[in-house]
Length: 95
Image 1 (cartoon, helix red, strand yellow):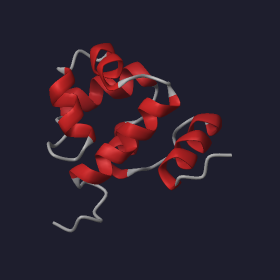
Image 2 (cartoon, helix red, strand yellow):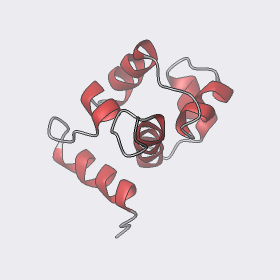
Image 3 (spheres, helix red, strand yellow):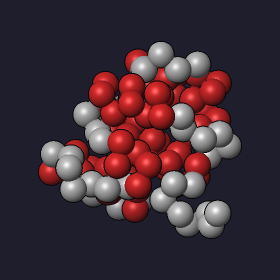
């Protein structure tokens, strides 16, 4: 699988990182908010471990994003302010 695939753990990890930054949470705080072990979450965010569907569902439900965003990077179903902020974090464009 190409490292550029949206399903690739590194791409998923970058989206999780952007979401966590948007909510101004530490890795431990974010992991705790969705009942994921902090060490496991850190490995997922770094792209070293795949995001399991049950974990993705908890993140999506808790933080108001879609599974499509987490796995595929689709921003179209998110509220515009959230989508804009996440895009800024993902592209490194901090205004």
